[in-house]
Image (cartoon, rainbow, N blue to C red; front, side):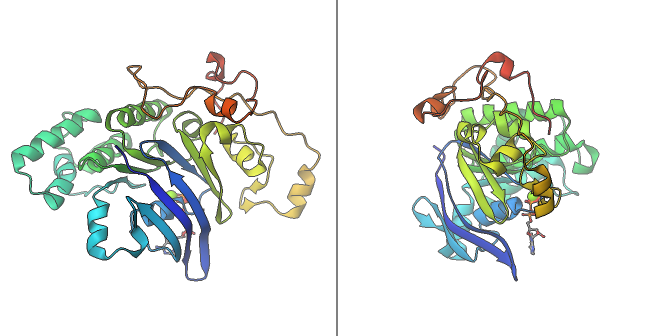
Amino acid sequence: MGVEIRVEGLTKSFGSQTIWQDVTLTLPAGEISVMLGPSGTGKSVFLKTLVGLLKPDRGSIFIEGRDLVTLRESDLYEIRKLFGVLFQDGALFGSMSLYDNIAFPLREHTRKSESEIRQIVNEKFELVGLQGAEDKLPGEISGGMRKRAGLARALVLDPEIILFDEPDSGLDPVRTAYLNQLIVDLNAQIDATFLIVTHDINTARTVPDNIGLLYHRHLAMFGPREMLLSSEEPVVRQFLNAQRIGPIGMSEEKDADELAAESGQELPPLPPIPMQLGTSDGTVRRHQREPGGWCRDNGVTPPPRSFSDDSMSEPVAS
Ligand SMILES: Nc1ncnc2c1ncn2[C@@H]1O[C@H](COP(=O)(O)OP(=O)(O)OP(=O)(O)O)[C@@H](O)[C@H]1O
Ligand SMILES: [Mg+2]
């Protein structure tokens, strides 16, 4: 279950502004991947391109052997049903109750009866912990509840691929922790392919199987979590460890003077790689790898104290 998405040489620009070019990566079927990058590097544009809402200039997006980029609108409509998308702002209809918001895709895309719809919608309300809020309008609930309502709506057609655009933005740390747990549990339950855009470094370090980093109009790196968390590549290292020293400045790139001022400054050591977040009931996700497995298979020595219990007690400031 879950389908693979293979992206090859994808390039997107608006007018003369290139957003990113030559992005090549594979989102493995059923795995959780996170996409990181400074604000404005085109993470939301990437998600919208994957679902076919934006057309790339060049490149391919292969899903089940078909290239989305060249599909006709009618075929694209079919393939879009594979996707559940949680947009950055939740994108709920303000004048509809939560119930009607979540029922909307079913009424729009299926021929299910209202009683079948009721059963599915109730199930999703329970899944995201929103029972009792069915009659509320989006404007009457908290930001965290809106995120969960958006998630319920993204799940209602049983998607094979779920894209989350900053599911955790605007949430307090406790709600972010609950949401991350929900994401991991959900992945174990439905086995879909997940791609999460986030700015939360602790989420990126502990939740996914794979991490990607968009920076300076290209994909700086994409690969297994342990590969990026043990990487010495300056941009990856700086971003994943939320460090001030490195090539990324306040306005994306540091100029030569800023970099010169930093030269000779010693980089802090890489922090330990934390354990990956497990499911709440202890079941192992189908694609979960054992701690340290990637490092061992690739002959990489992880930073000291990686994968130990005390590696969890040192959250990286974000
Ligand atoms: N429809 C559009 N037309 C023209 N330019 C656009 C459009 N959508 C996005 N852009 C531009 O593309 C760039 C990337 O935007 P995007 O929203 O993908 O950034 P982001 O990485 O998601 O940032 P953030 O982390 O702040 O959400 C920005 O410069 C933005 O102005
Ligand atoms: Mg965005």
